[in-house]
Length: 84
Image 1 (cartoon, rainbow, N blue to C red):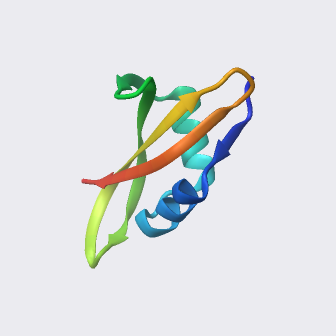
Image 2: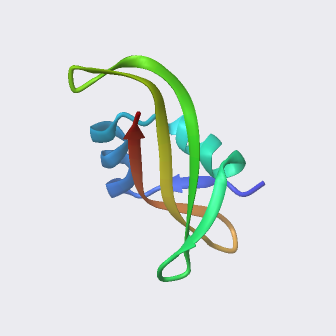
Image 3: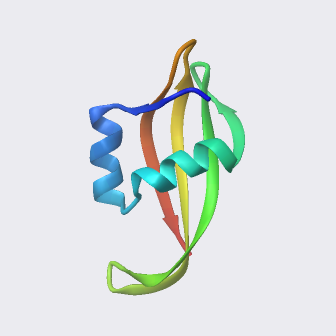
């Protein structure tokens, strides 16, 4: 199993968008993958949230990291989150 490394940008996006490192790793390893531009992939995974984000209650949080699978590691470029 390849190690997962977050870029500085991806780490900052996790903080600002409410994703944890564990959620990002789980989304990459177990989520639904799709190809995106420049030989990168996105993997989506829904998590039970049942909390407030921006003063609105959401039952589900979707974490969607964008990453590049290298020879020796997986490099996370950015992380998106969606609340619904």
